[in-house]
Image 1: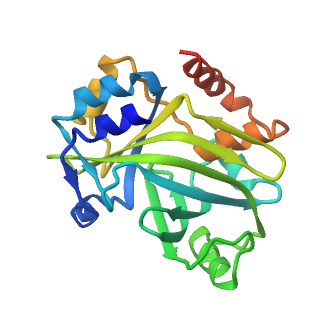
Image 2 (image 1 turned 30 degrees about the horizontal axis):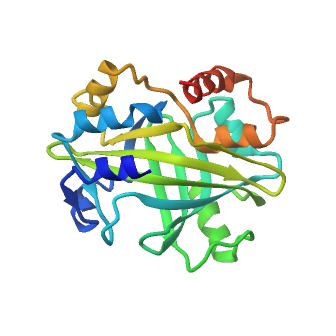
Amino acid sequence: MNLITNNTDKFTSVSLKDMDNVKLMNRTDTKFAFSVKKLSDLFNKIIPFYNILEIDNKRIHYYRSLYFDTSDRKFYNDHHNQRVNRHKVRFREYVDSGLKFLEIKHKTNKGKTVKKRIKVKQIDNELSIESKEFINKIVGSSHDMVACQWINFKRITLVHKLLKERLTLDLDLSFYNDQSKGDLKEVIIAEVKQERMSRESDFIRLSKEMGIHPIRISKYCYSSFELDNSLKHNRFKEKRMYINKLKQE
């Protein structure tokens, strides 16, 4: 972690206020996965093009998320079955800023990711009446949901100096529920967030040069079948093999 911290210190910093132009609550996402061993080389290549988010003198931020699903795992299965207009429901705590939200991510049939959220005072295993009403309004129907698993990670947020683009690098990822636990500490999950898909992204260009490939991966889905191998995951087998290969690099 010291090596990563030393590399993040090389970037010019921006504040949360400076991020207003790239909130991108309605956006296109492109995800990548690569070995943590490539991170230092990647940093050296992208420093000229990106600034880094700094909050309270911290450039690596801690996130805690509690995901909810139905007892028959509707949201997980919708993703596995490649259904459009699917959702994810979670509480997320932005630990360094002290903020907590109930967040719903909607993947539309146009390939867009739309995120809606409300601020909450605390994260509970049980949904309040207010939380249920918010979820039902966004999802469009009523579902009985239960807490499924925690996903925790550290995030580095980079902002392109010229383009309306945000790049997140998630590291030191771990996940657990009452029965099991796991992690992806050897792998970085990167995500390019744009208003619309554009190959002008310097990260996309440089990642191609470095042999870092796009992958459609959901931290929620990956952790779900790792925690419970009885879940249907045929469509995720190739991704699982790819991630396992990265872990061994």
